[in-house]
Length: 432
Image 1 (cartoon, rainbow, N blue to C red):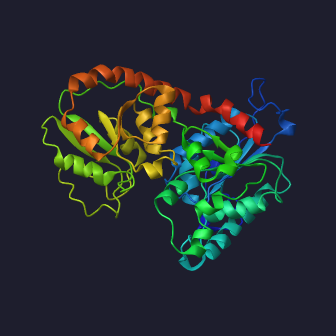
Image 2: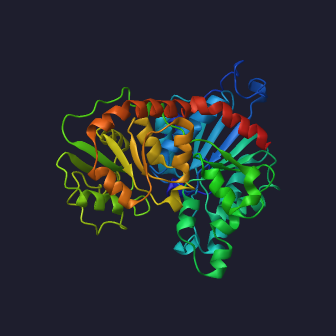
Image 3: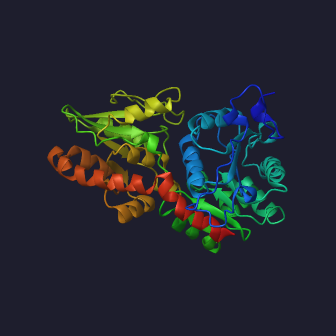
């Protein structure tokens, strides 16, 4: 049996580095610690983090960033992270500099007999197994915070129902792309629809539970869908890892302008529109690159107009970041229905690399522009995008580029884990 499918979440010994299985010695609680109630080693709090949905490299940069936010906010707390073995092995390797974090393998969210997680009976059964893991991990412990990194409809329903009887400590449920997917598609089956993500979101949350949005503007979208939970939604801007920051503002190349689509080549992310843009562009001074993993949704498209095509296998993170660094502009013609309710890791990657963007206008991007200033072009639709590229003026781009890069630097500084720690600690305290 694979360790990643164990249900008891017990660590192993003898076959993994200490960082993966054994906690490091607890840190002393310094005077400047963000945790106001930290009272020395004998009174340490514990933070329990669970990810039942991620596998291998999925959400790896965010999960690392989140752990760094927690460590900066609570230097003296013990942190445990539970997830499937393949994921925590990768995560542990990226966080060896963080003290007092223990990584423990546990079973993922898995429905019986391969039934779809949209099936409410199978989904709730799988979610209850996850709740049992959480209950065992937190029983009898001095818990400051329990965090669920990603949740679907079944996890939201079961955790919301079961949490009040389980713990009084705050429960933070991190929202990734599940609401965005639900905004694009909902089942017509009334039984499935009654238990789907949007229906679960409209139900009351326990007093100590919070939904954590990962981008500006997402809370407003959630509140439109579920007005009654407005007080229970907090925003943690997507952390940007310092290890992936570009060390300088790369100068524009002297050759062709490189416009890139970045990330998974799905239709909802706008890959089909990007391919159409490349195919329709007759300019010799512009070339189009797709950096990321291909998708069955778009494998049928003719991509001969692209200078670089999506990879048939997931790109190693280092190769992905390096390729992103070679671009001049990032183009993200994303579906607004999905990305008004989703924090985009691709946007964070572009910010880290100091790459100006051409993005379809949506609530989240408008909120970013309003807070930090312009970081490229907002376009209203496909026709506006095509017209912008067709009439692209390199001189005007060069003039605005330095301003945009200054704003990108401001964003990534504000979204470093260390900068986010103080406001997130305040959100945790408010949840208590």
